[in-house]
Image 1 (tube, rainbow, N blue to C red):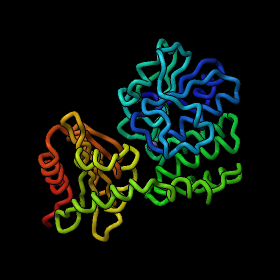
Image 2 (cartoon, rainbow, N blue to C red):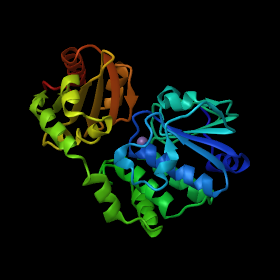
Image 3 (cartoon, rainbow, N blue to C red):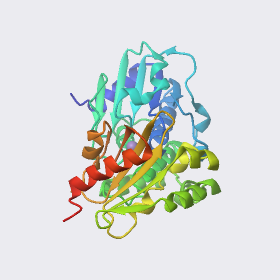
Length: 325
Ligand SMILES: [Mn+2]
């Protein structure tokens, strides 16, 4: 994989006219904020910009500036350039990727270490805590348009992927960028309240159910909870309700690895893992089950019942962190 410089990507953005800005299915704040930030910046450059995500704009992120421009993919269209943001494998673009026809150039900007580097212009920085941080550097280096709305989208991208500037991937540069975004007019109190103090009651009812299934393995180093299809249906859970709930397990003293098991309708279980220690590389564990992600935050989809997958995965984690020592 050859990395492209910001200058090469910047030229491609200036040279072409029709852009599709895409990100992964089941998007998070980094995916949606990154799509909108780059999409709005290109629009201000006078480009024709289509912003597609298979799941559309999640209700929770309805406040993002320009949010009405982010839609589910419509009929397949021709573009000069397709840009995949925060998406570790092309298949994770889902129907949004399938709806892009004949793009002459694919640009891949991401921070997942497992990204194989698909596309013509590739910029992958696994040290960046968020794709939004890479986009800020691109915008600054290439003197692309930025205003309060673009800054707010970047702030949301970075804040959500760093756990509000708390996870170990947060660097001095992340805070410098945060300061720059505030100077662009981001109201940190307002945005943080919209992000973190604005959940539907349903999400806390879901948390109550999850805590009822909480279990510990390996002398308290591994904590997990699980969500069955039945409970999800009874509560009317939406996919975005899950985001961040795993942090309640990670917050417990002595816990090194937190795991969230979610039963899916296709006979698989979605497994999300978080680690508090470099010594417990959850990306490596998830890769054993066909998944991937980051060292401290990863996931996989594993075939089997909830009970079967829980047992297999918890055993694999205990093997790695020597639970019995
Ligand atoms: Mn991300």
